[in-house]
Length: 141
Image (cartoon, rainbow, N blue to C red; front, side):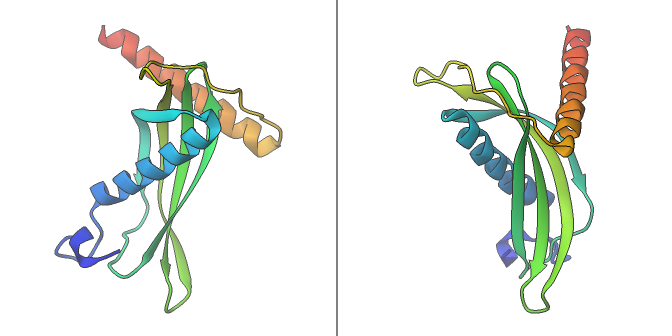
């Protein structure tokens, strides 16, 4: 991360990190869908520790849930001090995307293979987040 990404404390702005996480999540969603994907929700975002100027920001994404046209991706962020060799988990978030066809309309996505116990747990948690989003959406109407 570079000085233009930081505040007066030399910490990278949270918004910069969120943007990078969103881009990483979108790439994961597009790889799964084989279509363009756009963000429709950021379900959660946690900041565990600051990222400093000079650290390497590494994002790891995995698809945790798939609906008919939507995909949830969990993104974990680690900051690496490449000189000292230390790695710190700094952020976590859940992003939801919708796949679009060539006419920019929502399009069906392939199902998610949920095989391991960890995959099943992540899927169940993602389904609970989806149910909560839908509940809040209907309450807003």
